[in-house]
Length: 328
Image (cartoon, rainbow, N blue to C red; front, top):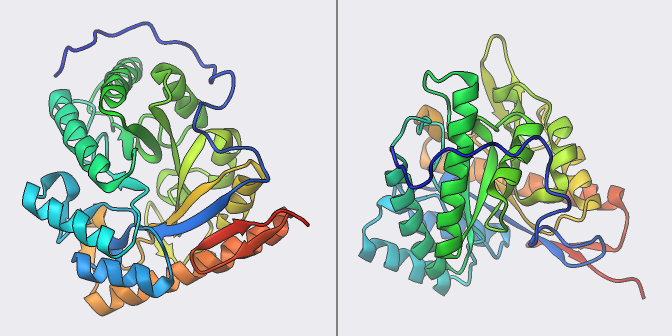
């Protein structure tokens, strides 16, 4: 385990005094662009690019290519992928890393996490993005106090590294210490104390992790810098079934409306889990994956335009996203 920084005194429960620099600007400006984690449409990059073009998008969120996480691609393979994405005229607003994720407990080697961060920072630069998705480390036998202390220490170490490498870490409300608790997520922001750390909100993780998405989002909305959209229902026991956005219990439309009224501007990115569930090792046949992804992408547009109408203001919907049109 890395000793780059020794454990420090935690900084309390208070969030930053105001939204961090780089948080969404004030209501009345800009646009919301659609994108998606396209490896849920196709494992190969050709299929991923085609799925984005069919939906009329101008961006994709990148997690894996040909079944390989982005950090495990060879240098030449990554260079080819980056070139093809650029040739397709698509942006990559966020890279989804495995740092702190569901398969990385708090006992994992932090030096390896830092090596992955450094590699992905270089790849983010090549792709033209600064945002790198992380999580906050599932426990591995530590007491609650020790788990908290180690997670906050790791966040400080990772954030300092992100600052040096010119990237921004975005913590997702999923696996780990702060995945299901708004106060803990704000504690992460406080511990990081840097513009190189922000929040990513996924609308559909509540069913699996036992919380109402809208309730979690309310205190976090001013600090959210990227949004993933999925929907789900909780079945008997701990079972979860994922649904097309708008057909589950994730309050997707309400979450999107809240984000709009809070001033969020950026990307809304589908991560459907309908036909592909990486944490279960499940992938449907290619045609079914492509069809499910297209269906979820269209559902996002419909929900977004409904949310924009409910939020008020001069929004105009396009295939690529929502555009704010100032009143004449």
